[in-house]
Image (cartoon, rainbow, N blue to C red; front, side):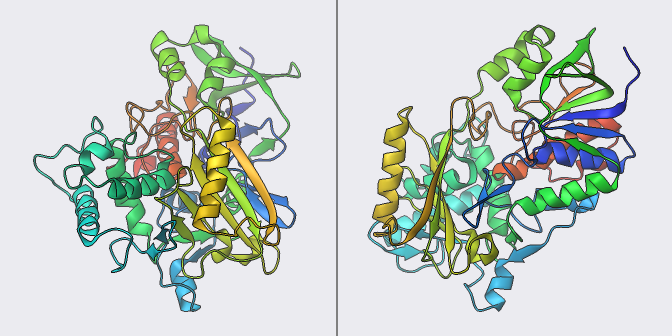
Length: 454
């Protein structure tokens, strides 16, 4: 092997790769990040479109008390937030993240509203479900990773209206539903998410790109190197040991370790399937992904003046909507509103899925898609070769059942959404990054996380 030019090469400049780079650089390592695209950040950044800052995937972080922010703080990546408390002090909203809207126009705040499209008994049953999942102990009721959230909920309710409300909440947090999300994961999401669903929730100023800008600054200040438009052809592996990468240009770059942040299937492609055990190949080939659409709308009118998030249990495909301009008007042209409607797919018929989602929006907010109200509509599709995530938080794919950051190949590590961890959507990513750093640096300092996660 040639002498290594770097301590670490990181393939992919998504938020997981950038976090790993920042952690290694803070430990004094020499790091090179290789990104095949024209920009860094993966699904955690924004692109300018008609004066709007349109997300590439993630609609928001969770704020100052999230896993992402705690990691950023540890490496010195300074992120500014606009919190629900900040908005309340301005006289906007009541410090509450979201409310439920039904197709008949009725709205409610779960567990707080007296009026609802649900009966009094159904509201009581919903409250019991949420108290049950949040309880520290619940004897004789299975809350394990082997039972679905629906099965758990049916200990307290038989109402399909309550189940559909759970589907909406779970869909926003994970892209799944009560049938496909294990109860254990629902508990982690509830414990972490509900704690931030009120005044503590914070929106990254300027959008999620703020995380990427802050991490990039740390990387550059500590001597890290980032190359975009640089495609890795293969990971160099000899005698079960990774020693660098070969680029599409033919250039070989050597390092002491390689960190892969470009997805599970591409790990097998770049590393060569012959270099991995059949157990890992079978695991990756069998992963259940998240397939969905995000319908981004630039509008002339806001959909809500008191909360940034809407849950939509009556809809066929839209599980929720998020309005980033509620927090930060600068992500849109003056006087305009931007919303992100999240739509997990249920079939392989793309036209049917999008048509149902469009119908949902029109039923939920009549006139929302009138030409006089719409600046732009962008249907972002995540499916097949480019899903929202390759490893959904479903059965046999949660916590430590996800992909281990330490691969069976020596000196080859894996980070990103599909790695070990549990939590609310992308906020689980730092948990796998911490494990990878712990393996690489042989230290426990990166494992200062909730016991629920690992």
